Amino acid sequence: MSEGYFDGSMPRSVLEYYLSHAASAQWISMSDTLDDDIRVILKTGIKFLGRAAGIWKASMPDEEHFAKCREAAEKIHNADPEIILQACIFEVVYREDVESVKIPAFVFEAFGLPVEDRYFNYDACLFPTDSGAWSNMPDISKPETQMWFYYRGVNYIDCGYEAFHMGQIHLYTGHDRGYKAISKVINMLRDYGSEHARRHKVIFDAHSHSLVVDGKSLLDYNAMPFTRFPVLDRLGEKLVLVREGKSGGGLSPEGVYEEALPFLYEYDNWGGRDKWAHENLSYEKLAWAQWWGGDQISWFAAQDEESRNKFLDYTFKWTAINNPDGYFAFPLMRGIGTGGDGNDRTYKLNNCSDDCPDGFSQEDETAKLLKEGYEKYRVYGNPSMLDYGGKDIDDPDTGVRLPEKIVVYGSFQPFVGAVANDSNSEITRMYYIGDGWHSLSFIMPFSGEFDFGISTWGTLSACVCEDKGFPYSGDGGKSKLVIPHDNCIVRIIFRYISNEIKIDIV
Picture 1 (tube, helix red, strand yellow):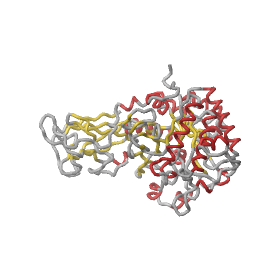
Picture 2 (cartoon, helix red, strand yellow; picture 1 turned 60 degrees about the vertical axis):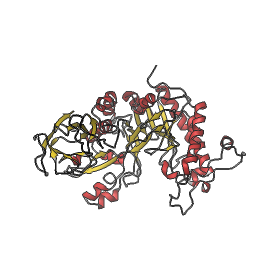
Picture 3 (cartoon, helix red, strand yellow; picture 1 turned 180 degrees about the vertical axis):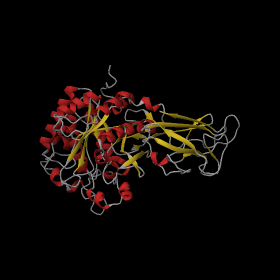
Picture 4 (cartoon, rainbow, N blue to C red; picture 1 turned 30 degrees about the vertical axis):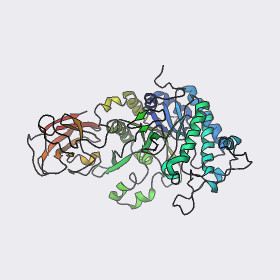
């Protein structure tokens, strides 16, 4: 039986099989290169196609939209029936989209309402004008919005989609006290999916670290874009990724308690390249303006081919070592905006060819990384907890109280998202792993020679380095850290009592 088999329920191991072979495939249901897209999917082993269908602002009538969604789903499933396709229901509505749809009878019936001959009411979906919400943001506490969400979800399930991305869920639930309304809608779609979905199961994510009510998660896994830290002493628009929070735990929709639900990272889009920022901001200000003056995927697409391949490699390894519950949705297809010239563009992972002349040529790198898998790098990873440990813990041999805070600091720190030589940084704080030992893993995106020391208690008054068998005070005397090639994984292990330091570079 395949690792991806499920019917009616989905154990965590099966969910993680799909997330570990995930890609963001925004609007692949409308792709003009679908045959070549499917070739790439089969070549790379992608099994989960995120954002495969949905609307932000509709480009065609709903009847035509859902027909295209169904046609693409059938074609993809004919190539690989195991694939999960994800549809989106976002935090935005437009009058011309909402009020062009006549409410089907099944929607009224599902909500226990008398059937009416009417269209959806845009105004009845919105927050009050003085609420502070976007002018076109739906309020899920409104029955009309619940009906709109349910209507879209049922249609996508009928088209063969088995997963939903629910957008910025904490925005449109702003008036949904206790998350009762969104819980109702999600559970209604789960119930519908248990009877009508391809494998009698639908799964949900949203941009959230945790959405738990009465101990039970509304989502099957959490999802967020990456967080970045710009690097200013390298040519071009260089940046590194920084861990932000963790995936919350709770009782999963499968009824299993999880300390941390799975987590899916992505290169997000929200507006493309900001032409004004690139023409008017200084280098330093541009570095901090979104992702160098754009959204995540437009920044990525703007790099040269070699840099894109290296950043995919970096992102994959970074995810593996920084979040044991995390996975990366490779950018198979994602809108990159207009760049200020009025022409919408799409990033495509496909190799550039006659069949996909607008491909960006990352399919070979993606195939390599997915074949290697996460476990190759997770063995060097940081622990899942973010509290670091070490509080009120005594050394097992001497009884000496261990420091609550131990930090690796030095010239390497900006390349992992911290300030250089910050002995008090939370970004490079070590984790207690037992028996008096502390550990920290990070990935260095650039080769070169750097320095490092270890500060105990987060100060410069009692530091340790590899070259000295005793503590020293002050910023001098740090050890060398030689990185032989880009995207090296570094693991530093330190024992407080004996001042032993061990370094692995992979």
